[in-house]
Length: 308
Image 1 (spheres, rainbow, N blue to C red):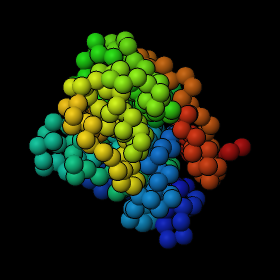
Image 2: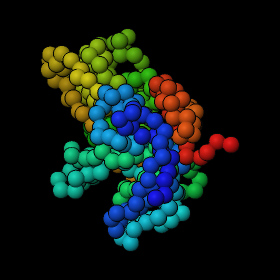
Image 3: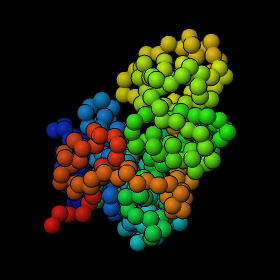
Image 4: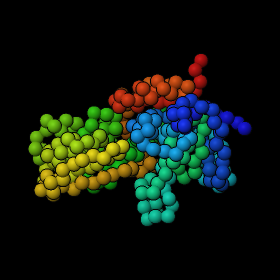
């Protein structure tokens, strides 16, 4: 049986393992040779046991690579294509899936429910595979999933003429700022809401919610404004809704925007990702990568290339 290198969570914890290369099991399956895979907060939570998953599980979901093999019904891609991959799979049966499976409430995800991208190969349906032009660097292509997550802010119905706050001292907050600016939002702030004025903003986007943060964000949004909740927390967050009710705020939780649009923005060079790329480590040095990924200023990557 052909084997591959991978970073796996199993009953021994997270570690570097050799596991079987995944096979094409469905007619529309595509096997992608992973080039680089980014680490995010979700991966760290899984590794720390704060986000439970069935084991053994190959971790990772943000990646780019090259198509290595396709099933007989795989449309739109061929071996040799450079691609980014949407790691989210809808149930295919609900009304949300009819619009865009990426926001299916019963979705599954690479690295959580299916074996993921911290490996040499991953198998996904062709519908989740998006060709990337040759001029887009591998690291930028691996940013497609975070960009799609940032595009979710547009699901809140924000107006470009409004004055907005993007909360968070992290790379995702920077991504949100970039996609908003690209869409014509000209008046944005990254000020700490704890020091902002009361009723200063028409809307605020949070990227790292806790109780005090929520209260400050409610305070700085004008009456009738909008609070966009984006981050996913591993623990419950206690909040006081009384002020939000008094101000009649719209609180809108958002998940993902269109993955195809994310790939398009990267292909068109519309987003300046300078400063958002951190160090790259081979799979064998996963522990160093995970340690470095705790700093959320720049994204850390794993590469399937071997050292030497």
